[in-house]
Amino acid sequence: MKIRKSYISALFIAALIVGWMYSDNFLGTSSLSVAGDGKVADVEEEKIESKSPDLITQAFKVVNQQVPLQIRARGVTRTGFDIDVISRRNAYVLSQVAVEGGWVEAGATLIELDKGTLESDIDAARADRKAGQAEYEDIKKRFSSGGAWEAQIDAAIADLEAVRSNYESTKKLVDRGVKKPLAKLQQMASLKAAEMRLIELENQSEDLALAASNARIKAVDARIAMLLEQLEFTNVVASQGGWLEKYHVEVGQTIKENAPVARILGLRSLTIDAPVPQTQISKIKIGDKVDLDVDGAGKRQGVVNKIATFANQATRTFDVEIAVDNSDGTLRAGMSAGVRVTIDQVPAFKISPAHLNVDEAGSLSVKTVKPDGTVQVMPVAIAQTVGNAAYVSGLADDTLILGMGQAFVSDGSKISYKIVEEAN
Image (cartoon, rainbow, N blue to C red; front, side, top):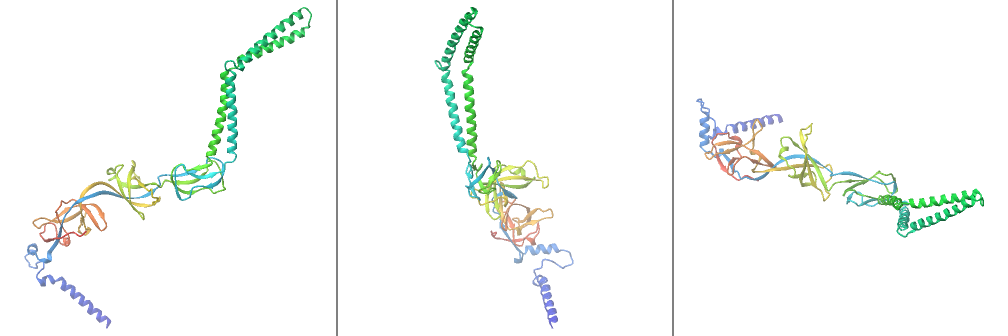
């Protein structure tokens, strides 16, 4: 019984289909002629010219507007910089000052290190410098006019004259036999000592003494500077402002000089590398505005910052660097984004993709209607796509484009049409 019902249903549906196919003949609206004279085209033309309501095609007028012509690509965000902050001295970590996972300014203290004996060493070095400076001033005073050096010279000259006089007297007495030759030798030794003393004083140079004293002061200054630098290095600071991604050390840990202690990322300004085909790279210039659609983060604006001069050997594309402001910190490195670089403004009109036709070569076209009702195929180009619609260029304002029903008419045929408004 069930099988018989299925047969009956199938026959009923088949009858409906056949009836629908021949309905035009029954109603007198068929566009074909079965006459044996071969004048099918004449019959079609007669039916078109009869302007039957069943053959009315919808048409709408072209209203152009200025639409940006854009080059599209996709890219991935990366940081402006990625640096490790290092320790400049051997010490252990006292504290972590900045909060990990937050913004830090350039020069902000990240980590405090143990100072050790640096402060007392600096005090001792400063005292040593003070003594050296006093010695320098004493040398200047000693060699000044009327100073101790001149007095010493005068005393040495007087002493030399006295010793020489004693030597001459002793020599005479030895010659007469009053004194022994040993006395003469003793006086001669005293004379030579007095002469050497005078020579030493005369050979003393103020410039040399001052230079030696100044060298000592400079050496102390260098030591103080080194100690102060080491004291400054007890505060590990951010070399650049950015995002403190993480610490590499813990409080209480002893670290060595030049050991990395923290990582800072340049997130305030991100860079997107977008590959652009070689056929379009010449249309992009540094400074061009870029519309971005970051996956999961919405729309952003960027600027072309750099254009590669060498193509990627594998893809034959050129990387275009796009700078993106990220002062709010909502973007992260490694996020995918759609890129649209505006290179020009063109007149274009909005149309449903259903009204576009593609030929075997892949060229786009639309069907238009001339004032005499003749269909004309016109080439167009897509300037931009928005949602389920497209902006196409290539037609003048007020050109009539065929909409619903255009698939059933061909180039050069005459039709009846009704002007409607294109739905947005």
